[in-house]
Length: 245
Image (tube, rainbow, N blue to C red; front, side, top):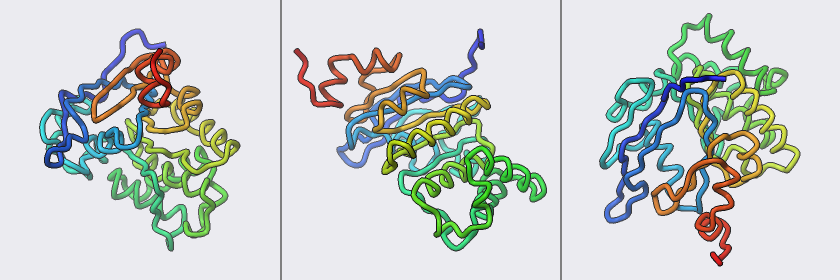
């Protein structure tokens, strides 16, 4: 157990506006090194935009972001990747005609900046932890949905990230497939990777995360212990449609 936590990611009053619409509205947030943080909220709450800001896919309208002690506010996405920010997307888009192993090599070499020899070992390790080792030589287009979800996560892990952002990685899976995926995510976290996970399957999130953030209209509505947050009357009304008594 860590007695002193190191902050890995800091957001200081970060906003992203599209005209009059504030997709993310003055969000301040700190993520500890080694933490597993869950993020929920209704559709349009700003969750994916928050990820896009962290990865550099979009530039903030205002605010500042610090990762691993470096100000990354104006840093390009590829530079953030090489600094240690890995990210999966809601809809997997692998290189369909490349093998599973080749997909990971692209991440390790170009996303992680690894030498070719180093990248082979890294990709082999990632295939094992994500349950894709026996699929290494298969074209990505032949994978099932669960396998494509695992490949999406594996590509992010190939860069050897300090921070892994998972965006609705369990969406569309059966209950059994979701349980298998949660098991894998727990193992990745246990190996020391910091995780921030957006998901609508709350029971999956709670089984992994030690802290839960709820977003609404681009702002943080509540945060804290996952079970306590889910019992909050405001959260139940906004997220589950249960009127406050």
